[in-house]
Amino acid sequence: MSIKEEVFQLAKITHEAAADSARISMSLKTSILNDVAAKIKSHKENLQKENLKDVQSAKSVGLSEAMIDRLTLSDKVIAQTVEGLQEIAAFPDPVGEITGMWVRPNGMRVGKMRIPLGVVGIIYESRPNVTADAAALCLKAGNAVILRGGSEAYNSNLAIVNIFKETLKESGVNPNVLNLMPTTDREAITHLLKLEDFIDLIIPRGGEELIRFVSQNSRIPVIKHYKGVCHLYVDEFADQEMAVKIALNAKAQRPGVCNSLETMLVHEAIASEFLPRVSAEFNKAGVELRGCQAGKAIVEWMVPATEEDWFAEYLDLILAVKIVKDMDEAITHIARYGSLHTEAIVTKDYAASQRFLREVNSSTVIVNASTRMSDGYVFGLGAEIGISTTKIHAYGPMGVKDLTTTKFIVLGDGQIRE
Image (tube, rainbow, N blue to C red):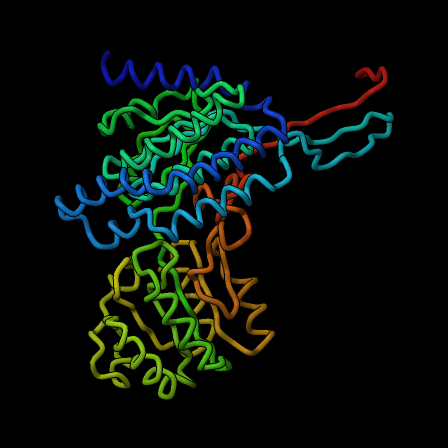
């Protein structure tokens, strides 16, 4: 069987199973997800054994430390995955929820009911915990799902999917509501993206190159974000101790992820005091600073920033720094160079915080907290299926409800159109 035929058959059986997924009761979904969480916890050693194969292979071909970090199923990652599954299991079932009902003059009642999207295709790189998150969120929302992880995580992904499939079978549910692409050949993605009759939505998670490839080649609607050029604006009324703590966490805690800080904007009124304080901490953490001319005049060891630095998603211990004269300049800078992912402000001024919330147009806007907080798990979504920086049909971290849509329902007692 060719790769094209193999992908077609996989999409077909998943599409046929979507009706089964939509009918799973709330209590059974809860039971399945809690059972999967328990098995992932009890099978931790086996999962990490399979994951080690992937990690060793990735190291042998020279994958970056950031990619190795994303690939590794550490004790902490597995514990968070288990907790996320349990949290998703405990959520109210979105399927069948009535989101509104109103009465027309003729007595007819019109409303909206939440329903599954159908079949969701997830294309992602490195992070095997995405396999568990995506599968759980799609099942909770009543969808069937096709998972296509990267070749670097195939053993890990397969081990997690096998736990889900085993649990589905034991629960009397069609195991084809969840399928992992059996090939890591990139040709398979191209064929998958043409199957609009079988797949309702594609969500790519990974680097900008992957997401642009998917967007440019898909006949199916795509939820995407190309990159995370996240900003922190340190206002003139900032608590500087807080700002240092937030900036250091946002940049250095885990630099290889999309919600890490890439550009710090500092109000000129506090720059001469604040920059030496924060730069000393960045220096200790091994962060290279690339600054504007005014910033370099204050911190001599800064590397001069170029125009490209303001657009850059470094995913590394590198930070662009710019001194701005006021919030107007900060907001203008973010609008020009940002990626609509996450922006934050540190300020004690309420009016400034509210203006920043209103006028910055990114999918997540934060006051007095790290950009690293922009995450579905942290926001209480249990996990996230991805982050959307396009406003249709979701914006920001996507949870269970974002994997549903609504249909109109009408309750009448004989009304006819005159």
